[in-house]
Amino acid sequence: MSGLQLRVVSQEQELVNSEVSQVTAPSEGGEITILPGHAALVAQLQVGELTYVINNKPSTIVVSAGFLSVSRADEVIVIVDSAVDERNISLQKAEAAVKAAQQTVVSSKEREELIRAEASLRRAMLEVKVALRSKKTKI
Image (tube, rainbow, N blue to C red):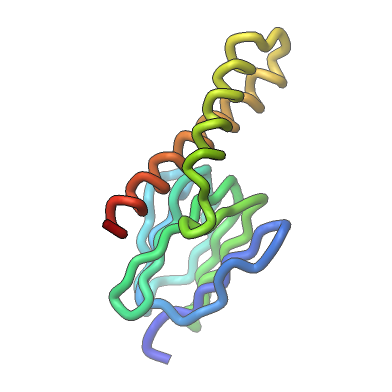
């Protein structure tokens, strides 16, 4: 194998199980890019864009918090609570989620509720950004 074997798994489904040439992920310490031959690694992920390249074509998945591991055998395993492929993002649903989360942030009275609403807002805003970018590249 000359590339990386990438596997992305959420609680709902396995999103990717393919050979890729590179992976870029949103780690807690900043964005990291994994290329073939990378040192073994375990990293905590934060909400963000996970990008991978197959046949010189980049693809993006919006991921929640989770973990990434890289083995010396060029296997990259990503385990996250939730994830959505850019092809499955509905701009209208993402924009509605932004509005709902904004309303919850404004009206929340409990700290826990506010934290959950802010996390939902960050993720929904990221989905809008990815959907808009994906829409521009298709034109």
